[in-house]
Every structure is written in structure tokens, then in C-alpha cells.
Image 1: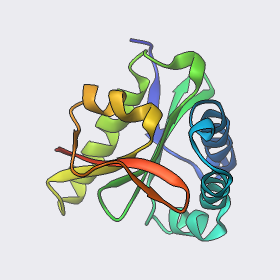
Image 2 (image 1 turned 135 degrees about the vertical axis):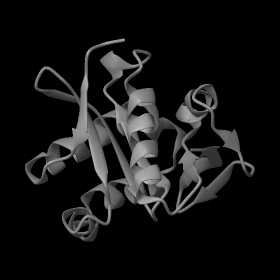
Image 3 (image 1 turned 30 degrees about the vertical axis):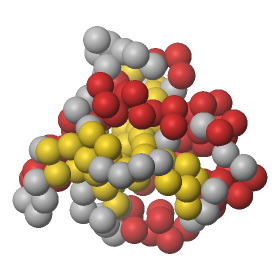
Image 4 (image 1 turned 90 degrees about the vertical axis):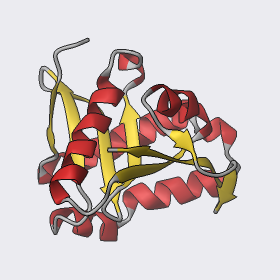
Length: 155
């Protein structure tokens, strides 16, 4: 496993984190989606209300850094729901995504308001989430052009 530093995102790193999410989304997920889904995702990561929630501490984001380069990010909405999880493609299968989930699980435990963490897994990520202990809670769903499988994992 690579020596990565995982920490809470700083305000000035927001744009870098969202750019990383967009780059990885385009490479691995956009091909599965109709135009509506691609636009829905772009709307999410460019929404200034989301950034305001982050600045108020209501939308936690953690990032993984290798040396000084951001190589992964994870965010949480609604107390215990993974909203975004992306790792730069050259760092896939090196434990970074798993470590980001562990950091977010610790965050949720510290908040003390939930005993599970949930995610709507994109088609590309379903195997990954199964490998790190998530299980499906419903069938594959599509909403606003976004295709996902609802999942959860205990803390």
C-alpha cells in the first residue's frame, strides 16, 4: 500500500477535488450514462450550494495525497451517505479508495449518529464496494440519468 496522507479537505483544495472527480467520472463512468446523467453529475460537482455546505462543515470531504498531489477524494452527505468517491486512475487498486472509506467511517462513528454508511454505487464501482464490505440494499436504479446500485456497510 502506498504511503498516502488522508486528511480533511482545505477550502482552497475544493476545485482540485471536484476536477479530480470530473476527470475520473469522464474516464470510467460517463460512457455508461446518457447525456442527462453526465449533465446531472457535472451540475452536482459545480453546484455552489454544495461548496457552501462544505464551508459550513455540513458536507465533509476528505482527500488522499501522495507527496503533495491529490490522488483521491471522498465526500459525505446526509450524515452517513458517501456522495463522491474518486481515485485518480493511475492509483486504482493500491488501497487508496479503501483508506478513504475507512477515514469516512471514522468520521461517521465520531459523529455518533449512525451505525451504517451508505452509497449509491456507480456501475464501475460496484465490485470495489463489494470488496470493501458493502452489500446491495436494492436493485440497480436510474435517477436523473445517473445509474447506481444502493448499498450499505456497517461501521
